[in-house]
Image (tube, rainbow, N blue to C red; front, top):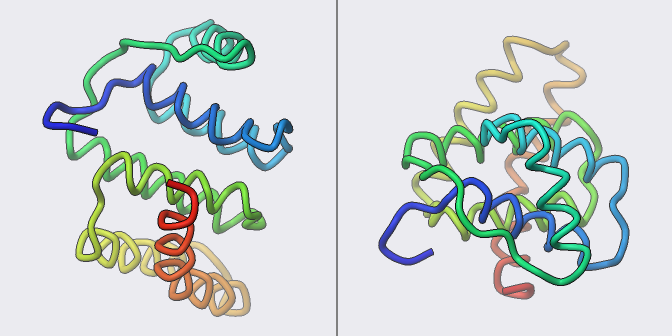
Length: 151
């Protein structure tokens, strides 16, 4: 990531690249990439431009700077969306990528996990809460392993 803040189009481009690593864009990946696009406040047409560029092996540059506060909110939002759906290997890979790209350390990740647990307890039935909380608790190891393996 370097010393400067990441840029929206570059992060989106990198995430699309990670998602297309296996050559497929699954329904779950499309759901996540759509949420990422909204969270990055991409303009109409930009997601498609990025996708088309990535498909031919090029990277999109530019976009707005993403503040640290925005980075953490984006990561938390995508984490929650992935948890509520069914987490596939590809979704874990995107979360691992964003965590690394945004330089989210263990303490920040734990704080995000705690916030997600609170959100889930407020929004879902107890049966669902138990499953999602267990998934959140397992997430640190899963994401850390993926970061080491993939990057």
